[in-house]
Amino acid sequence: MNLGDFASALSDICSRCLVVPERSLDWTIIANPTAGGFTIRSRWKQHERILRDYAARAASNPRRIGAGPSETALEQGGALGRLGLIPTAGPGHAGRIVEALTGEAKAVRSGRFHLIITAGGDGTSLEALIALYNAGEAVCSNFAVLRLPMGTGNDGADAWELDKALDLLIYPANIGYARALRLTTSVQGKGPFLAFNILSVGIDAFITHMTNRTKGKLPGDSYKLWVDIASLLYDLVYKVGPIEVRALDGKGRETASFKEPLLLLAVGVSGRRTYGSHKWILPDDRNVCAVKQMPLFRKIALKGLFLTGKHIHKPESKLFNASRVEFRGEHPILAQMDGEAVLLHPVDFPASIELTEPVIPILARI
Image 1: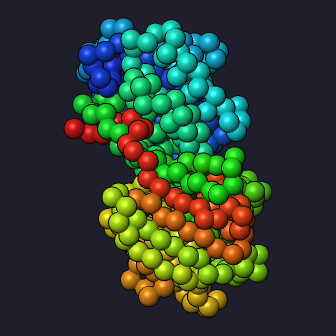
Image 2 (image 1 turned 45 degrees about the horizontal axis):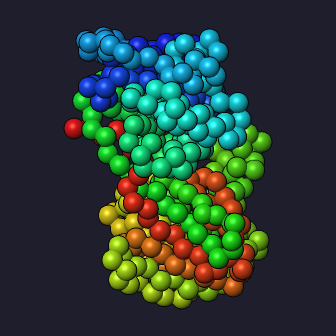
């Protein structure tokens, strides 16, 4: 993998992109060089071809006057910073880069528009979006984010394939504002926790947690391996007891209420969302899915249906819409926010998962 070639092609594209063409533009590419889109040779070769193609396509657009790398990129990116790219050096780094960018926007070049491109997996984009969310609405109005699918899963990216994501740069696009999901607990100082795709509790959070712990140590697709293991062992590690759930719409009206032993409670920013490398947990317009506890052989029989979304037709599944989901249980349970896990204890309940107001500026095709 040649990160310089990646930065050079994206720099050419950014210099001719059509994002907010009426304003001076700074761009910053936050790249995780250990992400699968860089390190898996076959995928990198495919991405390399796409980048060359789109750099050639972008050449038909006029070069923007007053466009260039951000000062943060120039200061932190070394030689690659002259092309607008900063390689991440470990967990938390993407968030610190965005914090520096929001400080730059406030203090140094406040009249300019800032384009942040994340080139990594869901963890890289999660860190960046949390930092931007915390900067506040006024700062966000001078930013836009494009999440390239350079990880292994890319459920939170703006497209599953790189060419579809790059379309948002070389063709006219609007700035839209996306919501976040916020998990709040009853323990002061624990949370709130944020997600921008799906926030869930239960067996899938356990799978996420174990995948993160063993990533790179197990052969093949470690997520798929832990799906198989969790079907057998999850009940032995975490007691699946009754969870009391109350769901509300945006006006505070109750949309669902029940108390049952649950394997899973997943809430999406919207419906039609995937996790775990394109598993269709929310395959239609409803943004909440609850899956009831079931016997072992039933779990084994149904687990494959989550790949296609056909689990929603089974009696163990409940799907509905909600803006806020309140829940409480009697036993510890894991929660996951776009692939990052936290353990909830009984003292954390009641807890809630709610949609925020639209706040994250993202690119959308006109």
